[in-house]
Image 1 (cartoon, rainbow, N blue to C red):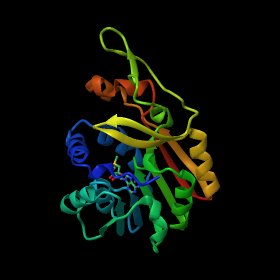
Image 2 (cartoon, helix red, strand yellow; image 1 turned 120 degrees about the vertical axis):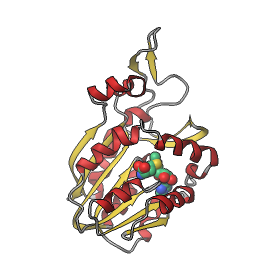
Image 3 (cartoon, helix red, strand yellow; image 1 turned 30 degrees about the horizontal axis):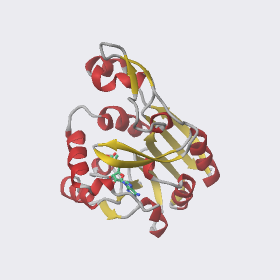
Length: 248
Ligand SMILES: C[S@@+](CC[C@H](N)C(=O)[O-])C[C@H]1O[C@@H](n2cnc3c(N)ncnc32)[C@H](O)[C@@H]1O
């Protein structure tokens, strides 16, 4: 399969930027706080951020004292934004696909990735490539879409609602059928790869990782009260899953 680079599509990039800049968004309120808590102390450490996008995370790692941060991404538009808005002396941005991680000569103390592994076809191969890039005591901390959220085909609403629009339960579809799914998200033909939870876990284990921590996203009662329309669905099924792994 050719690598998708939807973030360089003008419409998609413009709309994604709007979502990311909105004060209320899933990344800043639901995903990033969990991921940040799972990271080790970054002072003096080398960090690889896979699919760094617009560089918000790389900038936070620099602020937290990382000695150097390499952010890689397939999208030239996302990287141009990162270089313009989230630059620091210790950050390098590089245009490359995660499928080509074996071209990196360096080793890292911390490897992170936020909501990027949805786009990888061969998860186990990716885990093996990451494992080779890590120093002995390094950790991998990542988030990705939850398998219950990617078990969706775009042909029905994600939630069944009552007459007043309240979400009653989540709809999931063909959970056991792994592979490429094409749905509408800001543009037609948005592609991601659905895999089961056991495939993810076994991919990490066979690459040589030991899973140290796992979390699933859900809005806090406070956030739910503040933004029920946005986050109401998060109580029915998790949007994101998070892992911290060390080299076994
Ligand atoms: C949902 S965004 C997340 C960006 C950033 N990590 C964040 O949390 O703000 C997904 C990112 O993955 C990048 N991406 C998608 N496929 C990729 C691939 N094959 N290799 C590297 N980056 C990829 C996209 O260009 C985009 O910047």
